[in-house]
Length: 231
Image 1 (cartoon, helix red, strand yellow):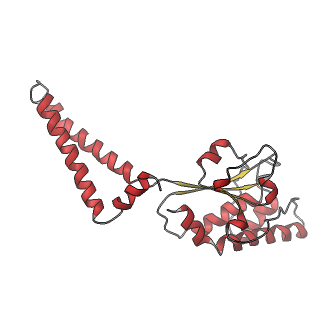
Image 2 (cartoon, helix red, strand yellow):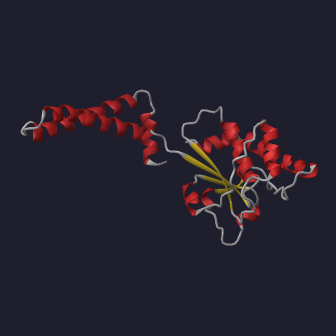
Image 3 (cartoon, one colour):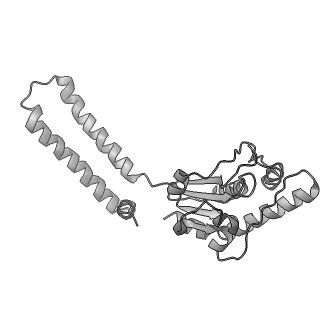
């Protein structure tokens, strides 16, 4: 656990938070008095500046306390090959599952592709079944993105759809935070790629099964996901 997270345990405590806030306020107050005795009282400063200085000090103290209290955000990244179906569907499904859950930390959920990108938008079938599932066209604005080194470094947890993604040449992912989606939840197997895309019933059925499998895996284990990320 990071030092900041340890300190936040005290800060979030109803008693210790008041003690810490009072202590910080006292420190800034003493600092202002020291500055006043050392410089202000012996210097011919305009009256307006003498009035403004304590306000500035109090604003600085308030800002620092607010920054200290601000929880560190977390990042969850779903990874597939082309970035048009499995990972954006997983992102939408997770977002919907969490929308009524109160989290301690802001959670950013990203969908990323190892590449190459096959399209500039979500696949038709993925978009269709997600709209069918939630009665909202939630993938209308999705733009597939390649997984970048920056995203990998920022991520707290990376969940990939199938085992081939872990052995793609030149695409090594950090082992400490990268897992197969199903394996992470104690299950076996892959989330199979429903590609190719299409508008026929056979294709839509294949994408429905994929979306339903993702929804079942994540939905049945959402508490574990929260416990891992929201600490």
